[in-house]
Every structure is written in structure tokens, then in C-alpha cells.
Length: 359
Ligand SMILES: *Cc1c(COP(=O)(O)O)cnc(C)c1O
Image 1 (cartoon, rainbow, N blue to C red):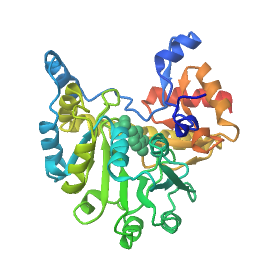
Image 2: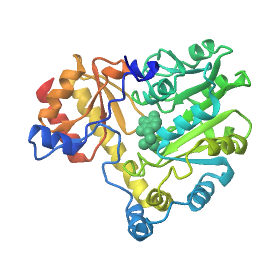
Image 3: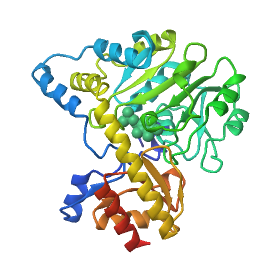
Image 4: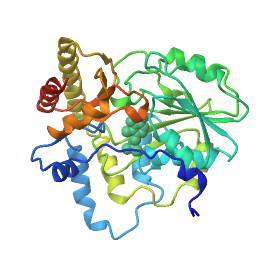
């Protein structure tokens, strides 16, 4: 007899990127680099670190349940009002809050195959049915997704840009998709990598939240370098936000995370440097991979999906032995691909050196 609820038994759990310390411990290695979770290779925003130090003596108190200062700063930075914003313990938690707030037990969630796994896993944990639609040339196929909308469809998750392919939905594609969506369908644009975007036809999704049933997710985990703190936010109509506020836990974003995120938003110097490192690293990796005859998917983000030409689980394990942590993409449905996060110059060079040995 099993005491566990049936839908939990059948879930393929999320496999996180391996922590550096774990690989050092398990393989007895001294120097390990992690290019597996799309984190900022430069460390955290220095302004965030300063803010954490300043607030350390206050952690006997509960955090501000309303996140007053962080919401105020976010509103100012993105031309929103605080009532548009819901804070989350990372955008992962906001995905969870969205499902809790909007999706009835018999309603469906629609997303792509080959996208961020948490949409599916969080939905399954809540016993919701998830319908997935294949990507087309590594991109979200919005036409095909639209055809799969039924009366049961409630929420559509779009990772833009898409993790793990690094491709994006354009403004025209998104506007076309939104044009005749049923009025009782909610669109979620998960923009974890928006800060890295430097293409002109990327949608300004925040401009739609007034008139459309849309929620935009952003995070401090990637460009801002605060993955370990867990803080993200959702931007949407005040009405939707108010119900998400009811569904969330009262102290979901901790005191240090709130202080750090508030400070990081102002850290233009750090953000600009991060963007520069990523674009230089990307140019180096594109060049070198092309020179090696290794195919990859061009990316607008800080990671690259690479075709290893053989089973990537093996490639991943081989690379670990040399102290380089990447992600094999088997769980995402790309059996022969790895995803590598763009690191510092030294890290990228080390990655290439090891990849050359293995391929
Ligand atoms: C990294 C990532 C997230 C998770 O962000 P957190 O704020 O750390 O929970 C969400 N969506 C996508 C597409 C991501 O790649």
C-alpha cells in the first residue's frame, strides 16, 4: 500500500544543476566550474551584497509581507504601480502561485515540449493536466499551440527566450497569437533572461498587461546574480495580482532577499558588465564551436544549446571528471545536446578545452 497521492508517484522529478561542492566531494576534484544553471559568472551584484550586510542584524524580524520597498523600486524601474506586482521566492514559486490562483482541478495547462521543465512538474504536483506542443526548429510554435487550445485550457506558459534553446518569440508573433485568444485563457510570459536581450523585435510584454490576460515573470536569479537568495516577481493587472497575493504565503520572500533585490535593481554598473561578459563569451564560443564543426542553436541569452552528436548524458559525465559541470538535455527531450551557461573568459576556455578532449 502506498500512502502517497497517485499523481505524485508518476512524476519525473526536476534534476537541478549539480552544485560545485558536491562534485568536488564526490570526485575528489579541487577545481570545479559550474556552467549548468545559467547563473551570473561574475558573482552577485556588489550593491546587493552591501545591502545584505546592512540588514543582517534585522533577521530576527519577519520580512515585510508586502515587500513595500522592493515593489516601489520595481514599479519605478519598469513604469508599473506596486499594485501590478507580486513577489515570489524565485519565479519558480510564482509559477506555483499562478496555478493555485487560476487553474481549477479539471482545467488544463498548455506549454511547449523542450521548454523549462517546471511548468510541467509544478502542474503535475498539483494534479493538473499539462498539454505540450512540439517546438519547431527549436522555437515555440505559437500557431500549433493556438490550435491546441480547448475549452479546458486555462493557462499557457511561454518561456521567452526559451530555456533551454535560447530562441525567442518575436513581438509580431506574440501579437498575432494574442489577437483572438479566448477571453478566459491566461498567458504567462516567463522572461527570466530579459536583461540579456539585444534584439529589436523582442516583445515589450509589460506593455500588454493593462489590456490583456497576461502575467509577465521576471527573476533576480540570472543577470542580477542572486539565484541563491530566491527572488522574482510577476507583473500583471492589479485585479489578478490581488488574487495571487491571497494565494501566496505571507512571508514568501525573505528579508535579505528583499533588501538585496532592491539594491541590485540600481546596480547598472554590474548589469552592464555582466552583459558585456556574456556577449564577449558568446562570440568566443560561437567562433570556437564553429571552428570545431560543432553545431549549436544561436541564443539571445546567457546559455547555448549544443549538439554533441552523441548521447549527452555520457558527454556530461565525462566533462564532470574534468571538473566542468554542464547540463545534459535528455530530460528536456534533446538526447544529443548539452546546455552550457556562458561563463567568464577562463571558464569558457576551460569548457572548450574539455569539450575538445571528449568529442
Ligand atoms: C532560471 C529560470 C527560472 C527560475 O528562476 P527563479 O527565479 O530562480 O525561480 C524561471 N524560468 C526560466 C525559463 C528559467 O530559465
